[in-house]
Amino acid sequence: MDTVAKPRFSRATKVLALTSIATFLVSLDTSIVVVALRTIEGDLGKPSLLTWVFSGYNIAYAAGLLTAGRFADVNGRKRSFLRGLAVFSIGSMLCGLAPSALLLVLARIIQAIGGAMLTPASLALVLPEFPAEKRTVAIGIWGAVGGLAAAIGPSAGGLLVEWWGWRSLFFINVPFCLFTIIVGSKFLHESKDPTATKNVDMVGTALGIPGVGLVTLSFTQAGDWGWFDNRTLGAFFLGIILLGFFVRRCSTVSNPLLDLSLLRLPFVVAANISGFFFSIGFLGMWLLNTFWIQAVWHYSPAKSGLATAVGPLTAAILAAPMGRVANRLGHARVLFFGASLLSIGTLGFSFSMGMTPQYLTHYLPWMIITGAGVGCSIATLSSAANAFLPPSRFAMGSALNTTARQVGSALGAALAISLTISAMSKINVWNTKLQIAAQTAPETLGSITAPLRSDLSSFFIAYRLMAAIYLFAGIVMIVLYRKPTPEQMAAANEVTFVD
View: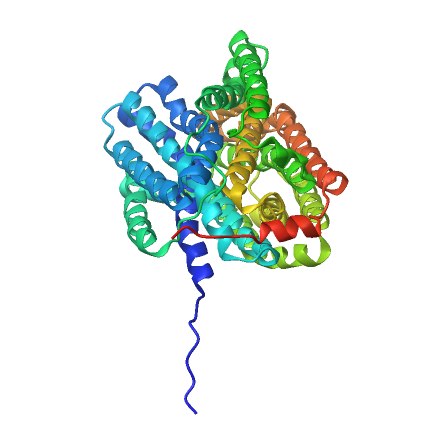
Protein backbone atom coordinates (compact mmCIF):
# COMPACT_ATOMS: atom_id res chain seq x y z
CA MET A 1 0.00 0.00 0.00
CA ASP A 2 1.32 3.43 -0.90
CA THR A 3 1.66 5.88 1.93
CA VAL A 4 1.92 9.64 1.77
CA ALA A 5 5.00 10.98 3.49
CA LYS A 6 4.30 13.49 6.22
CA PRO A 7 6.10 16.81 5.97
CA ARG A 8 9.20 16.89 8.12
CA PHE A 9 8.37 20.29 9.56
CA SER A 10 4.88 21.60 10.20
CA ARG A 11 3.75 25.01 9.05
CA ALA A 12 3.78 26.22 12.68
CA THR A 13 7.42 25.15 13.07
CA LYS A 14 8.39 27.01 9.90
CA VAL A 15 6.65 30.18 11.09
CA LEU A 16 8.48 29.89 14.40
CA ALA A 17 11.83 29.44 12.65
CA LEU A 18 11.23 32.36 10.28
CA THR A 19 10.18 34.85 12.94
CA SER A 20 13.01 33.69 15.22
CA ILE A 21 15.54 34.89 12.63
CA ALA A 22 14.29 38.44 13.08
CA THR A 23 14.11 38.12 16.86
CA PHE A 24 17.69 36.85 16.89
CA LEU A 25 18.96 39.83 14.88
CA VAL A 26 17.19 42.44 17.01
CA SER A 27 18.38 40.91 20.28
CA LEU A 28 21.89 40.44 18.91
CA ASP A 29 22.15 44.13 18.13
CA THR A 30 21.38 45.11 21.72
CA SER A 31 24.77 43.76 22.81
CA ILE A 32 26.96 43.08 19.78
CA VAL A 33 28.38 46.60 19.58
CA VAL A 34 29.65 46.69 23.17
CA VAL A 35 32.97 45.04 22.31
CA ALA A 36 33.49 47.31 19.29
CA LEU A 37 33.06 50.73 20.91
CA ARG A 38 36.80 51.32 21.31
CA THR A 39 37.43 50.26 17.70
CA ILE A 40 34.65 52.55 16.45
CA GLU A 41 36.06 55.38 18.58
CA GLY A 42 39.46 54.92 16.97
CA ASP A 43 37.84 55.27 13.55
CA LEU A 44 35.19 57.93 14.12
CA GLY A 45 36.33 59.72 17.31
CA LYS A 46 33.84 61.48 19.63
CA PRO A 47 33.90 58.91 22.53
CA SER A 48 31.27 60.79 24.55
CA LEU A 49 28.85 60.63 21.62
CA LEU A 50 29.60 57.00 20.83
CA THR A 51 28.22 55.81 24.18
CA TRP A 52 24.85 56.50 22.57
CA VAL A 53 25.51 53.80 19.97
CA PHE A 54 24.56 51.35 22.73
CA SER A 55 22.30 53.55 24.86
CA GLY A 56 20.35 55.16 22.03
CA TYR A 57 19.40 51.80 20.55
CA ASN A 58 18.13 50.44 23.87
CA ILE A 59 16.19 53.58 24.74
CA ALA A 60 14.49 53.89 21.34
CA TYR A 61 13.73 50.16 21.28
CA ALA A 62 12.07 50.22 24.70
CA ALA A 63 10.17 53.42 23.96
CA GLY A 64 8.64 52.14 20.75
CA LEU A 65 7.43 48.70 21.81
CA LEU A 66 4.00 49.50 23.27
CA THR A 67 2.98 51.66 20.34
CA ALA A 68 4.33 49.09 17.87
CA GLY A 69 2.40 46.32 19.59
CA ARG A 70 -0.89 48.16 19.24
CA PHE A 71 -0.18 49.12 15.62
CA ALA A 72 0.44 45.44 14.88
CA ASP A 73 -2.83 44.34 16.48
CA VAL A 74 -4.78 47.03 14.61
CA ASN A 75 -3.10 47.08 11.18
CA GLY A 76 -1.90 43.49 10.90
CA ARG A 77 0.95 41.53 12.49
CA LYS A 78 2.38 40.34 9.15
CA ARG A 79 2.42 43.88 7.77
CA SER A 80 4.11 45.25 10.90
CA PHE A 81 6.64 42.43 10.95
CA LEU A 82 7.70 42.92 7.33
CA ARG A 83 7.81 46.71 7.62
CA GLY A 84 9.85 46.43 10.80
CA LEU A 85 12.30 44.14 9.05
CA ALA A 86 12.63 46.63 6.19
CA VAL A 87 13.30 49.54 8.58
CA PHE A 88 15.75 47.44 10.60
CA SER A 89 17.58 46.46 7.41
CA ILE A 90 17.80 50.07 6.24
CA GLY A 91 19.08 51.12 9.65
CA SER A 92 21.72 48.37 9.55
CA MET A 93 22.93 49.52 6.13
CA LEU A 94 23.13 53.13 7.32
CA CYS A 95 25.08 52.04 10.42
CA GLY A 96 27.60 50.19 8.27
CA LEU A 97 28.02 53.19 5.96
CA ALA A 98 28.03 55.90 8.66
CA PRO A 99 30.92 58.35 8.10
CA SER A 100 30.60 60.03 11.52
CA ALA A 101 29.67 59.24 15.10
CA LEU A 102 26.51 61.36 14.95
CA LEU A 103 25.19 59.61 11.85
CA LEU A 104 25.99 56.23 13.40
CA VAL A 105 23.91 57.06 16.48
CA LEU A 106 21.01 58.26 14.31
CA ALA A 107 21.22 55.08 12.22
CA ARG A 108 21.15 52.99 15.38
CA ILE A 109 17.90 54.71 16.38
CA ILE A 110 16.42 53.79 12.99
CA GLN A 111 17.52 50.21 13.65
CA ALA A 112 15.82 50.29 17.04
CA ILE A 113 12.55 51.60 15.57
CA GLY A 114 12.53 48.70 13.13
CA GLY A 115 13.28 46.28 15.96
CA ALA A 116 10.44 47.66 18.05
CA MET A 117 8.04 47.30 15.10
CA LEU A 118 8.86 43.66 14.40
CA THR A 119 9.39 42.17 17.89
CA PRO A 120 5.79 42.12 19.21
CA ALA A 121 4.51 41.31 15.72
CA SER A 122 6.85 38.32 15.43
CA LEU A 123 5.49 36.62 18.54
CA ALA A 124 1.93 37.52 17.55
CA LEU A 125 2.51 35.67 14.26
CA VAL A 126 3.74 32.57 16.08
CA LEU A 127 0.98 32.29 18.70
CA PRO A 128 -1.99 31.66 16.37
CA GLU A 129 -0.13 28.76 14.74
CA PHE A 130 -0.14 26.73 17.97
CA PRO A 131 -3.00 25.70 20.27
CA ALA A 132 -2.80 27.37 23.67
CA GLU A 133 -1.59 24.22 25.44
CA LYS A 134 1.42 23.97 23.08
CA ARG A 135 2.39 27.63 23.06
CA THR A 136 4.63 27.34 26.10
CA VAL A 137 7.17 25.25 24.19
CA ALA A 138 6.95 27.46 21.09
CA ILE A 139 7.39 30.65 23.10
CA GLY A 140 10.20 28.95 24.99
CA ILE A 141 12.10 28.47 21.74
CA TRP A 142 11.24 32.01 20.58
CA GLY A 143 12.39 33.51 23.89
CA ALA A 144 15.51 31.35 24.05
CA VAL A 145 16.55 32.56 20.60
CA GLY A 146 16.36 36.17 21.78
CA GLY A 147 18.18 35.44 25.03
CA LEU A 148 20.84 33.42 23.23
CA ALA A 149 21.40 36.23 20.75
CA ALA A 150 21.84 38.86 23.48
CA ALA A 151 24.26 36.60 25.35
CA ILE A 152 26.44 35.64 22.38
CA GLY A 153 26.48 39.20 21.03
CA PRO A 154 29.85 40.08 22.59
CA SER A 155 31.57 36.92 21.34
CA ALA A 156 30.08 37.23 17.85
CA GLY A 157 30.93 40.93 17.82
CA GLY A 158 34.51 40.28 18.89
CA LEU A 159 35.06 37.75 16.13
CA LEU A 160 33.48 39.93 13.44
CA VAL A 161 35.51 42.99 14.47
CA GLU A 162 38.75 40.97 14.40
CA TRP A 163 37.96 39.40 11.00
CA TRP A 164 36.18 42.11 9.00
CA GLY A 165 36.09 45.32 11.03
CA TRP A 166 33.33 47.00 13.02
CA ARG A 167 31.12 47.83 10.02
CA SER A 168 30.53 44.11 9.47
CA LEU A 169 28.50 44.09 12.72
CA PHE A 170 25.75 45.89 10.84
CA PHE A 171 26.14 44.67 7.26
CA ILE A 172 25.72 41.06 8.39
CA ASN A 173 22.06 41.75 9.26
CA VAL A 174 21.05 42.71 5.73
CA PRO A 175 21.03 39.35 3.90
CA PHE A 176 19.12 37.69 6.74
CA CYS A 177 16.55 40.50 6.75
CA LEU A 178 16.08 40.28 2.98
CA PHE A 179 15.65 36.50 3.12
CA THR A 180 13.04 36.80 5.90
CA ILE A 181 11.14 39.55 4.04
CA ILE A 182 11.01 37.57 0.80
CA VAL A 183 9.94 34.29 2.40
CA GLY A 184 7.66 35.93 4.97
CA SER A 185 5.73 37.95 2.40
CA LYS A 186 4.68 34.71 0.70
CA PHE A 187 4.42 32.34 3.64
CA LEU A 188 3.04 34.18 6.67
CA HIS A 189 -0.69 34.56 7.35
CA GLU A 190 -2.06 37.96 8.30
CA SER A 191 -3.88 38.34 11.61
CA LYS A 192 -5.09 41.27 13.67
CA ASP A 193 -7.47 42.36 16.41
CA PRO A 194 -10.90 41.98 14.78
CA THR A 195 -12.52 44.37 17.27
CA ALA A 196 -10.13 47.28 16.70
CA THR A 197 -10.85 50.40 14.72
CA LYS A 198 -8.30 51.72 12.24
CA ASN A 199 -7.50 54.66 14.49
CA VAL A 200 -4.63 54.15 16.95
CA ASP A 201 -4.80 56.51 19.92
CA MET A 202 -2.23 59.17 19.01
CA VAL A 203 -2.58 60.99 22.35
CA GLY A 204 -1.64 57.76 24.13
CA THR A 205 1.26 57.36 21.72
CA ALA A 206 2.46 60.89 22.48
CA LEU A 207 2.45 60.05 26.19
CA GLY A 208 3.69 56.45 26.11
CA ILE A 209 6.74 56.78 23.86
CA PRO A 210 8.46 59.63 25.75
CA GLY A 211 7.31 58.21 29.10
CA VAL A 212 9.01 54.84 28.60
CA GLY A 213 11.92 56.51 26.82
CA LEU A 214 12.65 58.93 29.67
CA VAL A 215 12.48 56.24 32.36
CA THR A 216 14.81 54.05 30.30
CA LEU A 217 17.09 57.05 29.71
CA SER A 218 17.34 57.73 33.44
CA PHE A 219 18.36 54.13 34.13
CA THR A 220 20.72 53.90 31.16
CA GLN A 221 22.62 57.08 32.04
CA ALA A 222 22.54 56.75 35.83
CA GLY A 223 25.93 55.03 35.84
CA ASP A 224 27.52 57.98 34.01
CA TRP A 225 25.46 60.88 35.33
CA GLY A 226 25.01 59.62 38.91
CA TRP A 227 21.82 58.33 40.52
CA PHE A 228 21.04 61.66 42.18
CA ASP A 229 22.14 63.92 39.35
CA ASN A 230 19.48 66.41 38.30
CA ARG A 231 19.44 64.95 34.79
CA THR A 232 18.80 61.43 36.08
CA LEU A 233 16.09 62.50 38.52
CA GLY A 234 14.50 64.89 36.04
CA ALA A 235 14.27 62.26 33.30
CA PHE A 236 12.92 59.64 35.72
CA PHE A 237 10.21 61.74 37.32
CA LEU A 238 9.13 63.35 34.05
CA GLY A 239 8.86 59.86 32.55
CA ILE A 240 6.80 58.63 35.51
CA ILE A 241 4.46 61.61 35.22
CA LEU A 242 3.95 60.98 31.50
CA LEU A 243 3.32 57.29 32.17
CA GLY A 244 0.76 58.25 34.80
CA PHE A 245 -1.11 60.31 32.23
CA PHE A 246 -0.66 57.46 29.75
CA VAL A 247 -2.35 54.98 32.10
CA ARG A 248 -5.18 57.41 32.75
CA ARG A 249 -5.62 57.91 29.02
CA CYS A 250 -5.74 54.15 28.46
CA SER A 251 -8.47 53.83 31.08
CA THR A 252 -10.76 56.37 29.40
CA VAL A 253 -10.57 55.77 25.64
CA SER A 254 -12.38 53.01 23.77
CA ASN A 255 -9.35 51.93 21.73
CA PRO A 256 -6.38 52.31 24.12
CA LEU A 257 -2.75 51.78 23.27
CA LEU A 258 -2.53 49.40 26.23
CA ASP A 259 -5.60 47.44 27.28
CA LEU A 260 -5.50 47.74 31.07
CA SER A 261 -7.70 44.65 31.38
CA LEU A 262 -4.49 42.68 30.73
CA LEU A 263 -3.35 43.77 34.17
CA ARG A 264 -6.31 41.92 35.68
CA LEU A 265 -4.85 38.63 34.45
CA PRO A 266 -2.67 37.22 37.27
CA PHE A 267 -0.35 35.36 34.90
CA VAL A 268 0.36 38.58 32.97
CA VAL A 269 1.04 40.61 36.11
CA ALA A 270 3.29 37.96 37.66
CA ALA A 271 5.30 37.35 34.50
CA ASN A 272 5.85 41.05 33.79
CA ILE A 273 6.94 41.96 37.32
CA SER A 274 9.12 38.88 37.55
CA GLY A 275 10.51 39.52 34.05
CA PHE A 276 11.45 43.08 35.03
CA PHE A 277 13.53 41.88 37.99
CA PHE A 278 14.91 38.89 36.09
CA SER A 279 16.22 41.25 33.40
CA ILE A 280 17.94 43.44 36.00
CA GLY A 281 19.89 40.44 37.25
CA PHE A 282 20.49 38.99 33.79
CA LEU A 283 22.14 42.02 32.20
CA GLY A 284 23.84 43.03 35.44
CA MET A 285 25.45 39.59 35.87
CA TRP A 286 26.46 39.43 32.19
CA LEU A 287 28.18 42.84 32.36
CA LEU A 288 29.96 41.98 35.61
CA ASN A 289 31.33 38.79 34.06
CA THR A 290 32.42 40.66 30.93
CA PHE A 291 34.11 43.43 32.93
CA TRP A 292 35.97 40.93 35.11
CA ILE A 293 37.35 38.52 32.52
CA GLN A 294 38.36 41.32 30.16
CA ALA A 295 39.76 43.84 32.65
CA VAL A 296 41.16 41.56 35.37
CA TRP A 297 41.90 38.35 33.45
CA HIS A 298 42.86 40.27 30.29
CA TYR A 299 40.79 38.11 27.95
CA SER A 300 40.35 39.58 24.48
CA PRO A 301 36.76 40.32 23.35
CA ALA A 302 36.72 37.20 21.19
CA LYS A 303 38.22 35.00 23.92
CA SER A 304 35.86 36.34 26.58
CA GLY A 305 32.91 35.66 24.32
CA LEU A 306 34.02 32.10 23.69
CA ALA A 307 34.65 31.58 27.41
CA THR A 308 31.10 32.66 28.16
CA ALA A 309 29.46 30.77 25.28
CA VAL A 310 28.82 27.65 27.39
CA GLY A 311 26.18 29.57 29.37
CA PRO A 312 24.01 30.55 26.39
CA LEU A 313 24.52 27.07 24.90
CA THR A 314 23.24 25.45 28.10
CA ALA A 315 20.27 27.83 28.12
CA ALA A 316 19.41 27.07 24.50
CA ILE A 317 19.53 23.30 25.11
CA LEU A 318 17.20 23.51 28.11
CA ALA A 319 14.70 26.13 26.91
CA ALA A 320 12.34 23.90 24.92
CA PRO A 321 12.34 20.96 27.40
CA MET A 322 11.67 23.37 30.25
CA GLY A 323 8.64 24.63 28.34
CA ARG A 324 7.22 21.11 28.46
CA VAL A 325 8.08 20.80 32.15
CA ALA A 326 6.33 24.12 32.81
CA ASN A 327 3.18 22.75 31.19
CA ARG A 328 3.22 19.80 33.61
CA LEU A 329 4.53 21.28 36.85
CA GLY A 330 3.49 24.91 36.46
CA HIS A 331 5.26 28.03 35.24
CA ALA A 332 5.82 29.43 38.72
CA ARG A 333 7.67 26.36 39.98
CA VAL A 334 9.94 26.14 36.95
CA LEU A 335 10.70 29.86 37.10
CA PHE A 336 11.47 29.68 40.81
CA PHE A 337 13.83 26.75 40.20
CA GLY A 338 15.56 28.65 37.41
CA ALA A 339 15.83 31.81 39.50
CA SER A 340 17.32 29.77 42.35
CA LEU A 341 19.95 28.31 40.02
CA LEU A 342 20.79 31.79 38.79
CA SER A 343 21.05 33.08 42.34
CA ILE A 344 23.36 30.20 43.34
CA GLY A 345 25.53 30.61 40.24
CA THR A 346 25.83 34.37 40.65
CA LEU A 347 26.78 33.97 44.31
CA GLY A 348 29.37 31.44 43.17
CA PHE A 349 31.00 34.06 40.96
CA SER A 350 31.21 36.44 43.92
CA PHE A 351 33.10 33.93 46.06
CA SER A 352 35.32 32.24 43.49
CA MET A 353 36.51 34.86 41.01
CA GLY A 354 40.18 35.52 41.66
CA MET A 355 42.90 37.73 40.25
CA THR A 356 44.52 34.84 38.38
CA PRO A 357 42.54 33.30 35.50
CA GLN A 358 41.24 29.88 36.57
CA TYR A 359 38.60 29.25 33.96
CA LEU A 360 37.89 25.54 34.46
CA THR A 361 37.48 25.69 38.24
CA HIS A 362 36.39 29.26 39.04
CA TYR A 363 34.31 30.30 36.04
CA LEU A 364 33.03 27.39 33.95
CA PRO A 365 31.00 25.60 36.68
CA TRP A 366 29.11 28.75 37.63
CA MET A 367 28.55 29.61 33.98
CA ILE A 368 26.93 26.20 33.43
CA ILE A 369 24.71 26.65 36.49
CA THR A 370 23.61 30.15 35.47
CA GLY A 371 23.08 28.95 31.89
CA ALA A 372 20.78 26.23 33.20
CA GLY A 373 18.95 28.86 35.25
CA VAL A 374 18.46 31.04 32.17
CA GLY A 375 17.19 28.02 30.25
CA CYS A 376 14.56 27.41 32.91
CA SER A 377 13.62 31.06 33.30
CA ILE A 378 13.70 33.04 30.08
CA ALA A 379 11.36 30.75 28.16
CA THR A 380 9.04 30.31 31.13
CA LEU A 381 8.68 34.05 31.61
CA SER A 382 7.79 34.65 27.97
CA SER A 383 5.27 31.83 27.85
CA ALA A 384 3.67 32.74 31.18
CA ALA A 385 3.12 36.30 29.93
CA ASN A 386 1.94 35.51 26.41
CA ALA A 387 0.78 31.93 25.87
CA PHE A 388 -2.72 32.38 27.29
CA LEU A 389 -3.56 35.85 25.99
CA PRO A 390 -6.74 36.47 24.00
CA PRO A 391 -5.78 36.53 20.29
CA SER A 392 -6.83 40.15 19.89
CA ARG A 393 -4.08 41.11 22.34
CA PHE A 394 -1.20 38.94 21.11
CA ALA A 395 1.05 41.78 19.94
CA MET A 396 0.03 44.16 22.72
CA GLY A 397 0.79 41.57 25.41
CA SER A 398 4.13 40.73 23.82
CA ALA A 399 5.01 44.43 23.66
CA LEU A 400 4.14 44.91 27.34
CA ASN A 401 6.33 41.99 28.39
CA THR A 402 9.25 43.04 26.19
CA THR A 403 9.02 46.62 27.46
CA ALA A 404 9.15 45.50 31.09
CA ARG A 405 12.19 43.38 30.40
CA GLN A 406 13.94 46.04 28.32
CA VAL A 407 13.52 48.66 31.06
CA GLY A 408 14.75 46.08 33.58
CA SER A 409 17.82 45.42 31.43
CA ALA A 410 18.60 49.14 31.38
CA LEU A 411 18.37 49.27 35.17
CA GLY A 412 20.56 46.16 35.51
CA ALA A 413 23.26 47.67 33.30
CA ALA A 414 23.14 50.94 35.24
CA LEU A 415 23.52 49.13 38.58
CA ALA A 416 26.44 47.06 37.34
CA ILE A 417 28.23 50.09 35.92
CA SER A 418 27.61 52.42 38.86
CA LEU A 419 28.65 49.82 41.46
CA THR A 420 31.91 48.98 39.69
CA ILE A 421 32.93 52.25 38.06
CA SER A 422 35.37 53.10 40.86
CA ALA A 423 36.85 49.60 40.78
CA MET A 424 37.21 49.74 37.00
CA SER A 425 39.21 52.96 37.23
CA LYS A 426 41.52 51.29 39.79
CA ILE A 427 41.88 48.29 37.49
CA ASN A 428 43.02 50.57 34.68
CA VAL A 429 45.66 52.12 36.95
CA TRP A 430 46.65 48.66 38.17
CA ASN A 431 47.05 47.34 34.63
CA THR A 432 49.30 50.28 33.75
CA LYS A 433 51.48 49.63 36.81
CA LEU A 434 51.70 45.94 35.97
CA GLN A 435 52.85 46.67 32.44
CA ILE A 436 55.56 49.01 33.72
CA ALA A 437 56.62 46.61 36.50
CA ALA A 438 56.78 43.65 34.12
CA GLN A 439 59.33 45.56 32.04
CA THR A 440 61.33 47.28 34.78
CA ALA A 441 60.92 45.44 38.11
CA PRO A 442 59.22 42.01 37.84
CA GLU A 443 59.92 41.29 41.50
CA THR A 444 57.36 43.95 42.53
CA LEU A 445 54.41 42.37 40.71
CA GLY A 446 53.11 40.63 43.84
CA SER A 447 53.10 43.82 45.90
CA ILE A 448 51.10 45.57 43.17
CA THR A 449 48.54 42.78 42.88
CA ALA A 450 47.95 42.10 46.58
CA PRO A 451 45.96 45.24 47.56
CA LEU A 452 43.72 45.17 44.51
CA ARG A 453 41.34 42.44 45.65
CA SER A 454 40.07 44.64 48.48
CA ASP A 455 39.62 47.45 45.94
CA LEU A 456 37.44 45.09 43.88
CA SER A 457 35.03 44.34 46.72
CA SER A 458 32.36 46.37 44.92
CA PHE A 459 32.32 43.67 42.23
CA PHE A 460 31.47 41.02 44.79
CA ILE A 461 28.78 43.24 46.33
CA ALA A 462 27.29 43.75 42.87
CA TYR A 463 27.26 40.01 42.18
CA ARG A 464 25.44 39.36 45.47
CA LEU A 465 22.92 42.08 44.72
CA MET A 466 22.15 40.46 41.36
CA ALA A 467 21.81 37.09 43.08
CA ALA A 468 19.25 38.56 45.50
CA ILE A 469 17.33 40.18 42.62
CA TYR A 470 17.17 36.85 40.78
CA LEU A 471 15.76 35.14 43.85
CA PHE A 472 13.19 37.90 44.29
CA ALA A 473 12.06 37.42 40.68
CA GLY A 474 11.38 33.76 41.47
CA ILE A 475 9.51 34.59 44.66
CA VAL A 476 7.30 37.05 42.75
CA MET A 477 6.18 34.26 40.42
CA ILE A 478 5.46 31.86 43.29
CA VAL A 479 3.38 34.47 45.12
CA LEU A 480 1.52 36.16 42.23
CA TYR A 481 1.20 33.62 39.42
CA ARG A 482 -2.14 31.86 38.89
CA LYS A 483 -2.95 29.42 36.11
CA PRO A 484 -5.39 30.66 33.46
CA THR A 485 -8.98 29.66 34.05
CA PRO A 486 -10.82 27.34 31.62
CA GLU A 487 -12.62 30.40 30.24
CA GLN A 488 -9.31 32.16 29.61
CA MET A 489 -7.90 29.05 27.92
CA ALA A 490 -10.96 28.85 25.68
CA ALA A 491 -10.62 32.52 24.74
CA ALA A 492 -6.90 32.02 23.99
CA ASN A 493 -7.77 29.36 21.39
CA GLU A 494 -10.24 31.53 19.43
CA VAL A 495 -7.86 32.35 16.59
CA THR A 496 -8.85 33.56 13.12
CA PHE A 497 -6.74 34.69 10.16
CA VAL A 498 -7.71 37.47 7.78
CA ASP A 499 -6.18 35.97 4.65
